[in-house]
Image 1 (cartoon, rainbow, N blue to C red):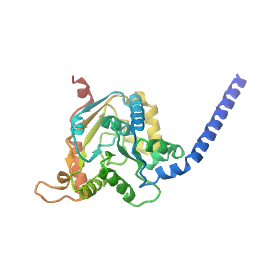
Image 2 (image 1 turned 180 degrees about the vertical axis):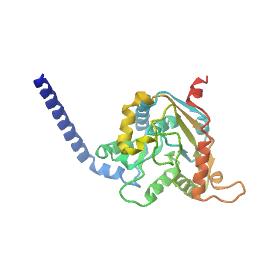
Image 3 (image 1 turned 45 degrees about the vertical axis):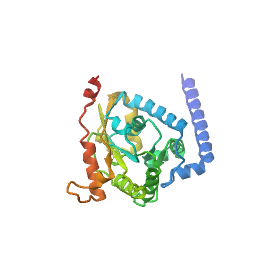
Image 4 (image 1 turned 90 degrees about the vertical axis):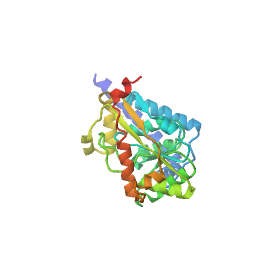
Length: 287
């Protein structure tokens, strides 16, 4: 028995050594690319059909494990939209990030935090960047200037941009305050294009939420704990897509006066919150 345990430990140690050696070699091999994709402002080439299909396949696999079935309501509001667009939603769960590709079903750009892009020594960032994901934060604090500049270029180039304005998850249905990045990106891109840019609001509701108690743990641990405990939280989800909001509507009040970026962000938050009209149970009971 003792020898069996020792042999098992030795085998595990050998596998761990091989894994560490392999990862180190891959980090050296992709060193320059890792530096690029983990830096704010860097924009990788647009995702092609193969990379987009792979991202969608991975997204479906992860949501199947963590969430289960997803019902999309009002999807025609996105499908029928013609023009530059920014896709937004509330951000209650890490799974939001893998639900969005299944809503869009096509190439897009996705804003992500540096914790995601630097995982596994930056190798995850290399893989994700090929599917359209780019970093929103790094060690240089510039108030998001470089990230917004990159995002504006994407919208100007008529690429679909996905931004979750809460920034971080709280694992509950209660929405946090919105950052004003979406408003700034939409306004600036519209000014440069000389035409409307549309913001598409979405509300994501889950059948069960882990709860804000997870906030006491490190972000990586939060995601790991929720993923490992998937049997407790795999209760389906519904995504409600609202009517697109033009930049004119986003920045103009009912009396004709102009909204500031902060006011536009608050208006967008209200529009997204107003989409919380369909429970997961009701969504799946509809024929």
